[in-house]
Image 1 (tube, rainbow, N blue to C red):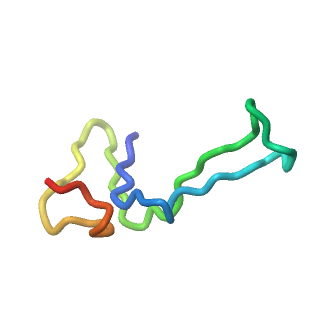
Image 2 (tube, rainbow, N blue to C red):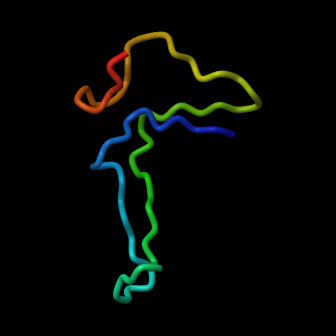
Length: 64
């Protein structure tokens, strides 16, 4: 299964420190994506539909 987020922007990226320790070079930071409200799912090789109006935040959308 593949998921297209469709609204990737800084507000939808969360960085978490699970160990709550001081961050060093190796660190314990984890990146999580949130807000999958308008995401599209591809199941069993079926393509994600691209027809209809574009979804997402205008300022962060690809220009094409």
